[in-house]
Length: 204
Image 1 (tube, rainbow, N blue to C red):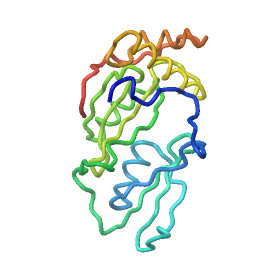
Image 2: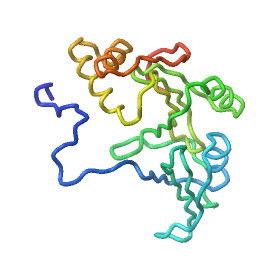
Image 3: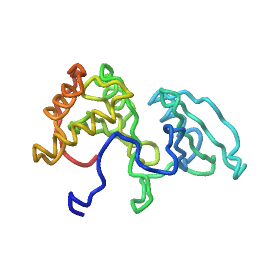
């Protein structure tokens, strides 16, 4: 698809019959309750806020975790399912889940993953900074921090402006200079967090 035919990148709401108001929850087929709680509550620090039967299949338990801002992540679990080694890739499959973390806790997060025996990679993704690891079922988990201080209600606007500046610059992906220029253009302060140097490489 040529750039002329590509869908426009814009923070404006599209002409659609209705508009969503945010992410309420994401539900994952989990393994068992013990392993799921050990990773998401005890390592990632998400409170377990609700436990009840899966209303579509009461033989399974439905676990609800608060990801930190009131948005919910839920799992269907059953004690007869062991944790798995990895995920099957394919159309419609989930590639990874990403959760935001405090940039001031970055070093502590990496240390906690090491202490838990979890491998991880750290990448500078241009518009944000990310730690990648895997949960108890091999699902890729991204722990992401903004590189710059951006009000939540302006993030889409900043990203879309950085996208335009990136295209005008002929760059392959948005980089610090595009983010800083976008913030300046939108009249927002350019406050960069102190994050570790990292490659912009690919993979986990």
